Each structure stands twice: as structure tokens, then as C-alpha cells.
Amino acid sequence: TRVEAQVAKQTKLLEGQDNALKEARAKFDACFELLQESVEKYNAKARSFELIPESAKHAKGHKFEIVLDEGKAGDIDSAVGLMGGVDIKGFVLPFVKKMGEDY
Image 1 (cartoon, one colour):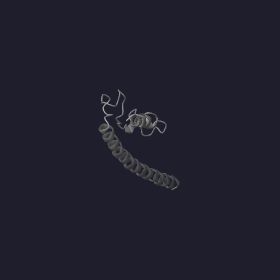
Image 2 (tube, one colour; image 1 turned 180 degrees about the horizontal axis):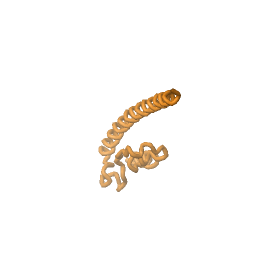
Image 3 (cartoon, one colour; image 1 turned 90 degrees about the horizontal axis):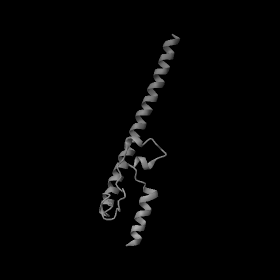
């Protein structure tokens, strides 16, 4: 019947959207895992430069440790929020550059 055909069509459409969503989630998970690995390397370097924790010798009370907040990953306007409040481009890079010039 017409109703059964419509239900079958909508079911197929829904299944396609569900598969696309699963595929997008898998891609997101892979990207987030790579980001976590990069953050771990960054935090290790920051520790070696005595920038972590905030009380470290060169941190001067500033927060350099990145703690990813997956809940803010969808906010494309706030990479700083995703990075746990650490502004890499606006603060960390200029700070480290100046630190290097001072030595």
C-alpha cells in the first residue's frame, strides 16, 4: 500500500542518516584522539620548559596546561574553550617567543 511504501522510504532515509551520523562520529573520535596525542606532547614540552604547573619557575602564575573539554568540541568559535581556557595563539606562542628572546 501507499502507507507501507512511505514508511519503507522514510525508514531507508533514517537508516542512511543514522549511518552518516555513525561515520561522522567515528571521524570525530579519530580526530579527537590525534588532538589528545598532540596535547600530551605539548604538555610534556611545557613541563620540560617549567611552564606547568602554574606555580612552575617560568609560568609566572599563568595557566599553560591544556586539558581538552570534549563537550566544547562542537563550539567552532571557541578553540580556547576546547583547550580548557588556554589560548595557544593569542597568549602561549607570544609568551614562549618572548621567553626565548630573554634567554
